[in-house]
Image 1 (tube, helix red, strand yellow):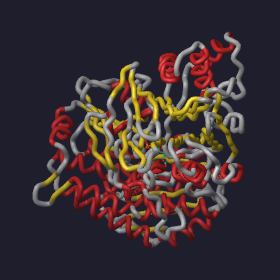
Image 2: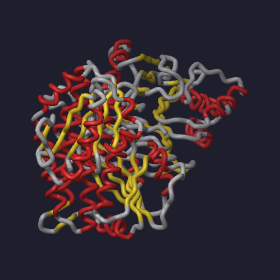
Image 3: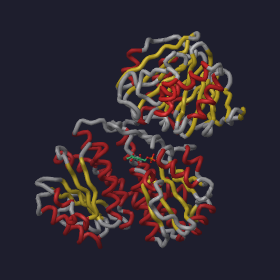
Image 4: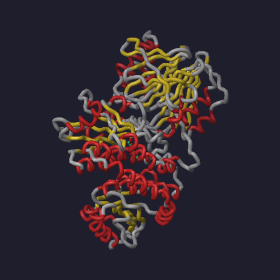
Length: 591
Ligand code: F6R
């Protein structure tokens, strides 16, 4: 989703702003732009496509004493230069970049039209610039104009704002991520996350929703509801935000390879062989006291939640999982004493933040999050960090394994079951073996890379591996893919099976293997090209890929590693951008 960067003070702005945007480009975007403030005048540059296109139209060593920049992932209005940010008010007094979505923008646009405002773009962002300009034209000073504008906006926004003829880098924030950094040499900066600021800033703060203010080269002033508020700045560990391929051709492959390390880290951070589980006691007590554990997530994080809920149920605890964007519609029963577990890599997913809006104040939320100090981590009552390290590729890989490992450890802690960490360590070893045999998966990909459709099937816990693998194939390889529990195929989907359609079947549980093999036979009888991925304790002659057996509930780990590598290989074979698939964003900050 959109990313913003801004700075004020003496510096060479072009490399800082374009470099900053490149560090945010994992978020996904389709156009970019920047603006420089120089002696009261603002110059604007915008381009479609990559940040390289933008850099090619911006003069080197462009003069300026403040600058703002943006990568846009289109929401309101198509992909065009006019819709790219920075957006400006019609009178060119206000220039701003925006991450978020304004829900009442149509109403505000009509209101502004009645006051003779015109618009150049289809964006909700231009409405914000125009509203601020309106209040300026009424004689308000910039900070009051921003405050009055915020009072009119429904929705989410992180804004960086420049005013023609008025020095200062202004900001406002509600429900979209924003970080402010104190610069090392008379500069101050802001951005959607820490990465673009690490080279030039020493200490950082993430302002609360409703905050607005002003950065100068020497100071940061923040306000909420007209009152000056103090901000506390803290240093950050640079290594947590560095992007390095470490010799891998793509971040996705590097991150898949880090899967075993992430599982082992989850174990060592949350379990000690001598003292037992290390989770905060208050988390364990509230989960034990809950009449229902409600797991919420989106996409891959939802699949981790599904597998985690199944394992918690199996461990004797009542758990349910829901897609966050659906749960908010109130269709599902709410028990008397639930605990909510919010699962997210980025910690910024808007659909999950909407869940938090509904459960705020109940004192019952536990976040399982990768990104430190992200909105979901800060707003939840408790947080467990996944500790997977920065995940750059858009597709979630290592963080999925980390999320599931933490959920299984929680189940182990609730049940005082010290075998769970050992089973996870076995799973890490099995994943390692899958990764070591990547070339076999590459060969398989070379045989089926022209397929337009694919199916993934499994039973029991293996079904969750099917769901996650199928999602990976869709998003990275653009192959239409369906995941089904084996028993469900004959109730409809089997009608789609044609000659040569690839069917990947996961069998990690020997007891369920027989039934799934019958389902696969039914598909093969109708022409499917089946490929069975089984554990060494479930394997039969002729299976396509056999991984080292683990406890059947933990087979999801090696199976998902197989699915991740298959999607990676197919994506490359199909000549696609593995790390940045089309239309997708790493941090989904709109509902
Ligand atoms: C899939 C993927 C997405 C995310 C989903 C939730 O590879 O990356 O489906 O899992 O957008 O994101 P987080 O975990 O950041 O809340």
